[in-house]
Image (cartoon, rainbow, N blue to C red; front, side, top):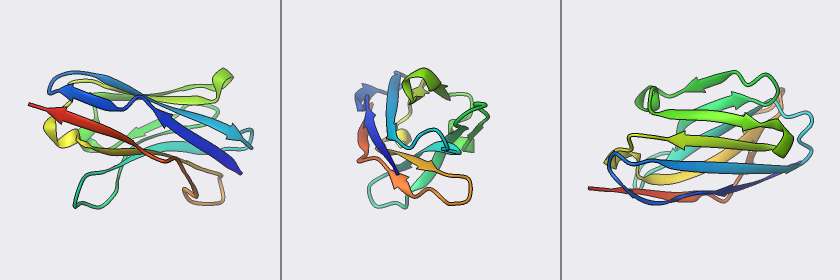
Amino acid sequence: QVQLVESGGGMVQAGGSLRLSCAASGRTFSLYRVGWFRQASGKEREFVAAISWGPGYTSYADPVKGRFTITIDNAKNTVHLQMNSLKLEDTAVYYCAARYESNGYDYWGQGTQVTVSS
């Protein structure tokens, strides 16, 4: 079992930046990947970015490529999502999720609100 706690959300003007953090605790030694997902009001949850727990291989959704960067601090068991050049359409609740290799994203944080204003 792994527990995830997100932080760093808030309100920012379009073009600004925010950094989200996801602190993992519990059985982290065998984690496979940690991802960020988001859900805007009235829309389905969508994938944003993911990183492999050890090697740090990354993947991004097309809408955030070149603007968002996912990184991992293995010493602190924390995954960060640096979000630059934020757009109105980035407004959503952002969730951190973790998976072990043989499973899907079974573990989720509580979510953190990101609001981008004009």
